[in-house]
Image (cartoon, rainbow over all chains, first blue to last red; front, side, top):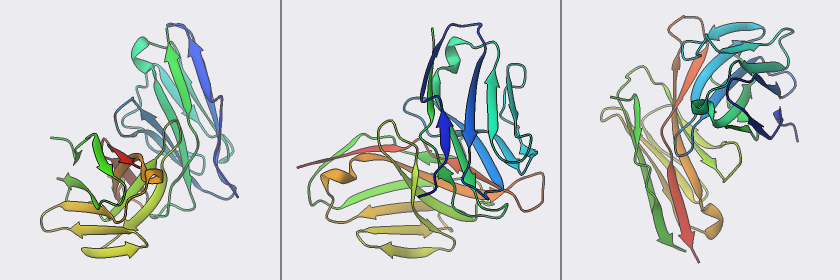
Length: 114
Length: 116
């Protein structure tokens, strides 16, 4: 069964260090999302791509976060420098097309900043 | 006021009970209404989605939308221990930037435990 792949599953980093997460969406899915989920909260959208273009990054802290999806397939989310408050689950999701279709989530990357 | 409000619980029920989970929202632009289930340390998975007001049933699950009251519900009949998870409501509206892209906004999630 096709699934969204994310790596690493867990990451511990020291504050002020750089950290990167990778996501490979389901093949053929044009829309890719990065969400952040703090423990006990719902996922919050960080950035949404349609193919290789960003269509929403209004909640992305652009001073330290960056995201790219160069060939419209896999994507990388980077944090530099990491802060203690960045500790959370980072979820990637993909959906088939730009209109509403089901969003499939990966297992997430749990980040701990110490 | 957050766009989507959901009581985080926790909610603990005995096996076989009927469970009612609810969310309210303030954004009239929301068009699609979804319920996701999230097991511990896993990503959310879609349970059901609806577009219009009314009820939609799928096995033991019933989703209900009342657009006039801006209120959605998920009912679980004959609850099982395997239903123990966090249930997230989510709502979708077109992006302000236009086009046909949709943005998904989640509630906080309700932690449900079904005791055998």
